[in-house]
Length: 570
Image 1 (tube, rainbow, N blue to C red):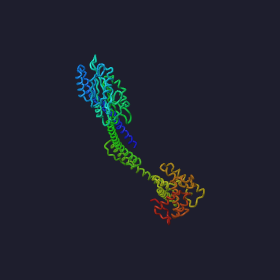
Image 2 (cartoon, one colour):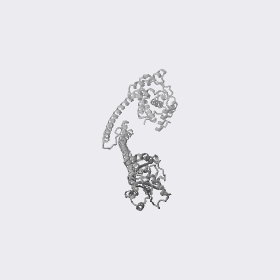
Image 3 (cartoon, rainbow, N blue to C red):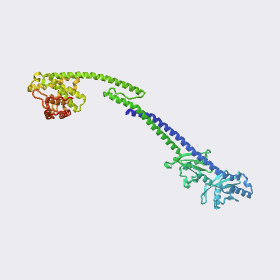
Image 4 (cartoon, helix red, strand yellow):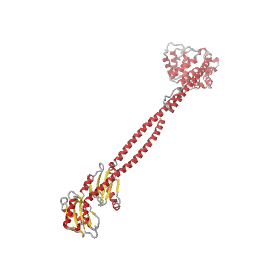
């Protein structure tokens, strides 16, 4: 699992990091291009609007300026009036025209105005604005601030210019309606929510759409504030100036652009919410991020599949190697890949078959050796039993009963073999007991019993040097220990007595009760089990006695009426 995670992580790092970097670079570069394109588009729209406004101002102004080049003051009064009326009729944007003398006094009869467009009271306001423009005017055209006429709040611009140079022959002033400009601004759109407006040099509204809410003073709007700060530098410069930038924060943030109409000092401004202005940028980012997410997902899936295909055979190798370690030789790895893993699997399977062959040979040798050991052990046991006709076969029977008890207690096969050998060899120490004591037909004296009790220790010393019988030593040395701690030779108590020794002790007692001895006859099974029940908890382990009863029940042996020695091995 750790290898799978390592390979998966390595592949993800190798695939995702370049993908993310490419995606990030693409987003960054494309964002810059799209933002630049969006700003250039706004700049172009503002520039085009300025050109339109210049045309709207130039068209009605040109006929008025033409009066200065037509020797207007050399004509008689009747001809002068005719020219003024002609210009006024020719351009409906012209609301009023007034001619002043060189001394800046209005010439009688040389004033014309559109009666249907402005009330007569507005003529006086026109004349007042014109006189204000004439102060210090020596050449060129001068424009006034935007004025508002009538209840409709009609925007009007007054212009004035001198006629003749050195000396000045007189002055001409005219009022221009800005209705066409207002109409143009209303019609201009910038995307779905952008708009344009025009301000004068003080930040006051000249023309604008409904998005401004009719607010006359725009000097507090971010783009206008920036325009007013830059206006002196722009007017002193001979180059065209268009500025684009972001203004405001959060939901009120806008992308604004402005330029200046130099003749009148007006600012032409566009505003558009950032979300709308950079909609393409956000849409592009979303598409790239979506594609990046899809690429990462595909990379994860492919990396997981590749890692799985690589580590699954390794899991098979690991599982099969564990089976080999547990002795299941011949187990093969089922890998059919035609690559290095497949070649490794073939080699592994060949090794497993060879190990199985070696294992079979070793098993045969081991079984032969074990059989030799067993025959030797049986011969030793028989040599003991041959000294006493009454105990002939006792060691073999103890071994068989001990194995059955061990199997009832679910002991592993290795311990069952140790019980078999331990049962056979439990009295091996009697070889060292003199025959006069060993074969005595009557009850032993205390001194003789003391000598007889040495046989467990003697047996332990006999088999101690044999490494093959190491696990059997406890059966030989401790099979006369008692559960209550009064046994010999070590006076062990309870569970301090090795389990195998407790089992052999129970099997030994059982066989002693059910076989004929010099001092007693074979007991019926029922009586023998009664004795074992009495010894349970005193001499014998209660759990081992209980297991012996289980063995008898499973064998279907009835306890009544049996008076012969019993062999329980199946």
